[in-house]
Length: 138
Image 1 (cartoon, helix red, strand yellow):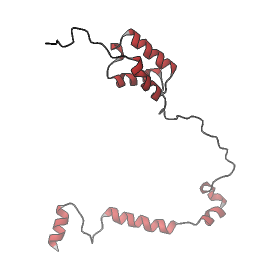
Image 2 (tube, one colour; image 1 turned 180 degrees about the vertical axis):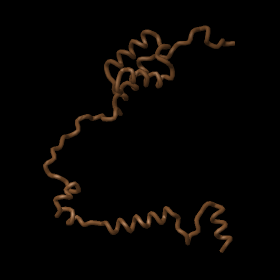
Image 3 (cartoon, helix red, strand yellow; image 1 turned 90 degrees about the horizontal axis):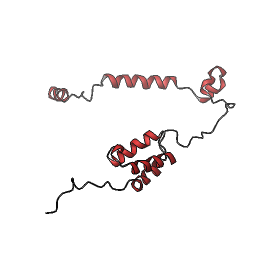
């Protein structure tokens, strides 16, 4: 029996016959919850406990924003440009003036995330490397 207790202590466990303080606390909470259980009839028959019942006269209003968490559109043109920069993997300042103008036109026309990222490759043709940076064919 001592070796069993020693092994449990060695591995940081409690023996199965001894409850931990958290288990004892959970048992006390279960007993208290069972004692406090009230029926629905008891709640509805008392007007002073009206916070538990649902009032009928509360007006409702439908939610009109299709995108409450900015998941479909970028919140601003700057955020769209940041996303385009991350999508391309390079800063927009390294693009040519013509490419930058097309991206500005795209961002001004729409902030829809899917549409912007779908049209970016068409706005930015592959960046040509200068002849100095190209490897020599030997």
